[in-house]
Image 1 (cartoon, rainbow, N blue to C red):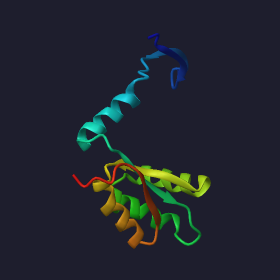
Image 2: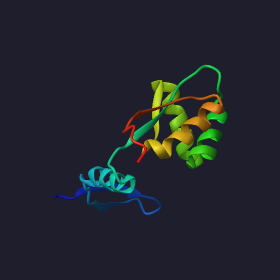
Image 3: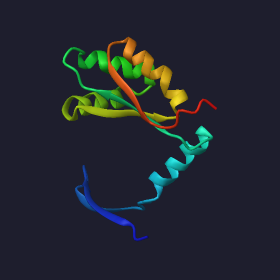
Length: 122
């Protein structure tokens, strides 16, 4: 695979510097394989949160930090995506792992559902 070369100017020297970065297109596939192996069955589900008109950004961010253990930055980005796109996948795991997280978000007033995955309780 041919590396991608970026040309950039770095202060305070203001000289052109070439930065090479190898881009591995198989990273997403490898990540999915790791998650499937961790599940043991390869049945991944997605926790989806929908936009609403009554929860504040701060409340949604706080819920994501407490329940999903996301960083403040990740939580803020997800809240913005939900606001502008109407929904976002906030977590991917087995249904068994996602169910208590979904229940906790719903108890806090967020609109959350689990999509995909298997209904097996193995």
